[in-house]
Length: 258
Ligand SMILES: NC(=O)c1ccc[n+]([C@@H]2O[C@H](COP(=O)([O-])OP(=O)(O)OC[C@H]3O[C@@H](n4cnc5c(N)ncnc54)[C@H](OP(=O)(O)O)[C@@H]3O)[C@@H](O)[C@H]2O)c1
Image 1 (tube, protein in one colour):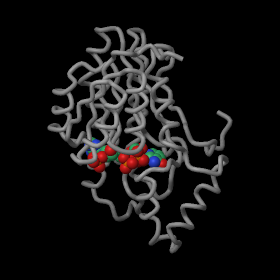
Image 2 (image 1 turned 30 degrees about the horizontal axis):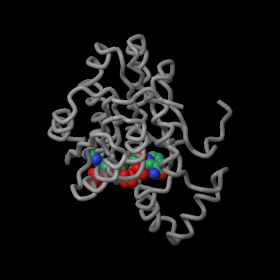
Image 3 (image 1 turned 90 degrees about the vertical axis):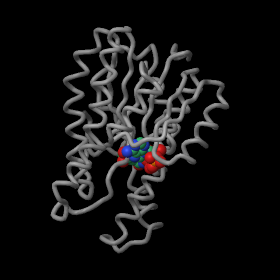
């Protein structure tokens, strides 16, 4: 299927590794010019080189998207994106009794407010141009609270609640906004998450790794390229009637029918 987005411009934060990188690669393979944002220069530049092999224009931007400077640098490199993919770090497991107000503010900045700010800075231009696709990489935690990830349960729920309202105000101008909710994926963040569970569970890394896969109906972790392909379709010309949705990609781990 031709996704009909060749020549469009995409701005993706959190895109040098893992799920964000997979989204960037899937879009580049469809002929979309790519601006990548991440904090670690060498990894970012390696990823940019990989993406250039697809033949599209790739612009790497070193920056922290949870800061004003990071967002300004991203938009200076790609001032009028047709496609915006918002992604950044999650938070490690912990107990809410130990978290301070600053911990919460930092989680809100990374998982909610920076995404909202990027939408504020781009959505009106998309509406004026008559095309826009915004994807937020969120987490299944907004549908299946993860006990050890209360910062994520809380901050990400704020994001999807906000998107539910905004998405209905932009779709008539062909600007859609959807949230992708990953379950367990084979990525650096997954490994970091498991390392954060070693102390409280007393289990080994390998045992937890295996148990998490075994508990999933698919009996495995998702591959980042599977999420990248989903993202690219949602960013396509064909997906203009899909908006305001919280879309699980989790091997069936969400146990409900609806
Ligand atoms: N993997 C899973 O199973 C899973 C499941 C549910 C939800 N999620 C969530 O999905 C998101 C992506 O996960 P992942 O597995 O792809 O993570 P990952 O493999 O650790 O990759 C994260 C990417 O984001 C960049 N990044 C992180 N914070 C950033 C910031 N503040 N500004 C700019 N770039 C930033 C990282 O590069 P630098 O570090 O160099 O900046 C890297 O490119 C995370 O929020 C994660 O919590 C993941």
